[in-house]
Length: 88
Image (cartoon, rainbow, N blue to C red; front, side):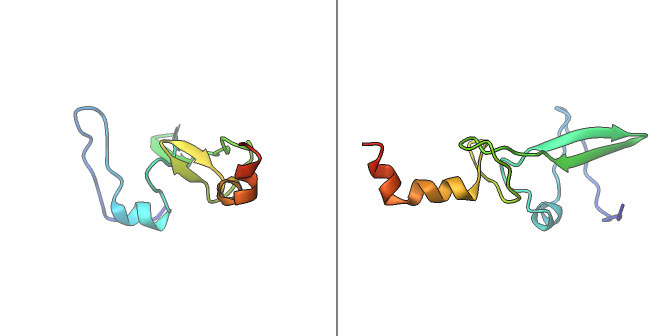
């Protein structure tokens, strides 16, 4: 584990803020879910395995809207006009 030299205080509700530099380097955007684990005396945060709300598949680059994961393939299907005509 690399030491970043950064530390954060836990607020009264038990929250911490991950530094922007770390969020950016790990592509942790708003809505990304993290699993929380404990190993010995360490807290482990890891990206949750996200499943697309439309197709149920997994993808390395899920897009999130209101906390719902959607894969880029399904986003592309929403943008195709011939697909939209089938629903009219």
